Image (cartoon, rainbow, N blue to C red):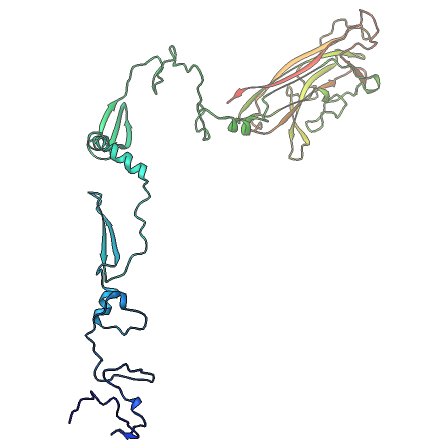
Length: 402
């Protein structure tokens, strides 16, 4: 039987037992109607939630207010689009759109472009000019080729264009096949031709690096000239005999002070040797000869003599290139003699990039044995106009290559 609790707030209640076995000892533990009840224990609503028709003003809602739907709507639903969930820009129109919603994931930041306000303003100002450039200019060329006198330019899109190169000579034009032996093309002013590769043909241009590497230390010409007077103690005393190819100083006649070194730059060198020897023999100046000894340079910078340039002897005959001119056959004290000669060395043993030493050698072929040769002076060498002095020289050069 249902009864209203109105009007029984003053009833005294002691030790009431409920069907579930729980008890209360005072009416103060009951929920009282038409009054304020203070819920101090743990209370649950397992079947029905409490309801309230109270619709408080927003200013009346505080931290201690139990909320119903009226209160919640006023606190949290004044605007249903609370945050931005999307950011987009139309690439054609340039319109930027912000999307707001009360559901979804809010965006925290968006880096759309690094273009500045000034740049955007400049684009807007020049829109007409940009449009004209886009629609009216021809596209760029992507490749070019030359076929004979035709230069073909191929654009990124569209049809290739062929341009005919001029064949006539302009005042400042240098043509591939232009010029003749009688009327060559001339490069004037400041012109630079880069040569980076090694030459393949004898007519190819070479650069300094190639020349330095291949010819810088390769001499194809050399000479020695001297008017030195050999001290009396060092004057060679030459015995009679024909020196061997391996020892040009076998009998004391090698003139090492006149030696010349050359290095042919190619195989098949033709080497011309010229000598002029001035001096006086101690005696029997008609019994003497001159020839040339040849040595090969070794890796340790020493030299090995192995060839001679002279006439081929027959039997016991002496062999050389030339003898001495005698000015006065009975005078052997105050009149110089001279031996001049030349020889072309065409030996197949002359190798490219190999250094050779050429040395004049004088030979005592008879008479006084041994006898001295006073180079560049007379025997007495008196301080008088009647006693001559002279110069001796030796020149070696490559004439060419076969």
